[in-house]
Length: 116
Image (tube, rainbow, N blue to C red):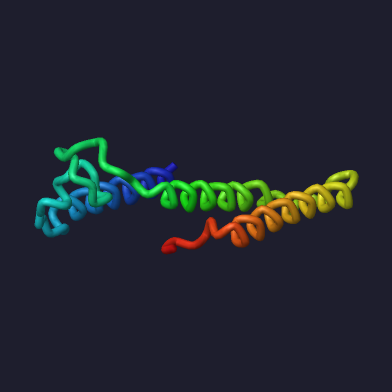
């Protein structure tokens, strides 16, 4: 019981000390960019009808697609513990082949070129 009380006391004190230090330690240097609600470089008070490059959206969608691929392939190392690990690795190979073919297609179509 005494050990638990000591552990909780240390955790509590450490939490309080870190919270106090985190409020006093950082330097406060606000500037226009940091105070802006949008940190992406757009002027929030300007016109919302400015032309915008669709290539940015294409690259963002491709990034999300390949990021999703990583999330789908993360459980693969545990696939050898399933009743049919060969089928699991077969499906993973099909996913990788389809995504590789899609990447090659986008590359050949020039979808990955930022500047023309």
